Length: 434
Ligand code: SF4
Image (cartoon, rainbow, N blue to C red; front, side):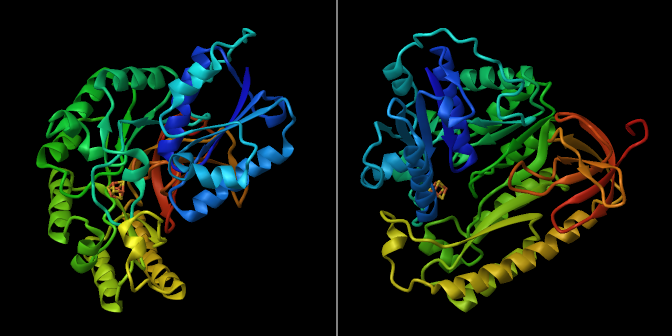
């Protein structure tokens, strides 16, 4: 069977789609790029917020409108897990729905392909990128009042370390230069098996098993679970980059209590563990503005906290109520215009700090991981290759713009010669000029 798979939502959903693809490939089913060439249309949906649900419905409807009678349409993933009825109501002709992590069930239903296809091996597992996402666990046990994830995905369950190492080896063998560890809560890794420092142990095993992946990056840490042992392990292992993404959600203790999140004291302690072990560590965090009841003063406390900690990268979201979460029913919802205004003020502050952080890199020698085979044209002529330094995570942070033409996946030694709010300008170091 030929299938066309569309993946919506976050990096973790991308990993789910890859697992599904592995199961389908094992049945010798063939992925095709164009929907009209497929026997089966698959949409892996996102249901995290209302906008994501609307996008999922739009994509499914688009495929449904254009499909032939002999083409099947399956909808899977987060939206079908929590709102299958909405999918069925919007697109009644969907042939089957599956929730999250159902790849084996889907592959079993389809059975082995009746025609034997010559399945092309992709040079890299994830759509030509030199970075591979490794989802180390799924689900979440935390009580955050704004979040629907524990309802969608259930409690935290860690993936088996041996399986993860085998997956990491496969990516490295396919040429991946960066492994990005993702989860709903990466620092909880192993807790379901009683391991207190399971993530530190996993990093050690990965470093030993896959030394050819020069960058291992940690996303989605939970404040309070960044232990001194984890910070020291990150500092000690040469291929774990000194970078941590730790969503903090707010900078006011009253708000954090309402969100049922760890306090600022706990957040500061985790940051201190990281900065003590790695003084040059790059910190990324995310905040929600306009959570119900957020006063002007509480928002100012968030800005003060950002000034105090000077995070290198900040992502921000305006609060959007999720049906089925405790926060959705809270009184004192903040008006949309106020949310937007606060979002603008936070991002303006974050941009200035990000620019300072990038300026501090000027004059330093770095490795740039090239991400694209298609160089851009520089303003004054010549080519620019697009990549990232260890300071930037794929998709969410900035870029490094490097003079010259280099292939995707190359790690190029370079000097930082200029800084923009989100991106760095680099020249190849001697011996690397193309
Ligand atoms: S830790 Fe993250 S995934 Fe878990 S409930 Fe909180 S926001 Fe949701």
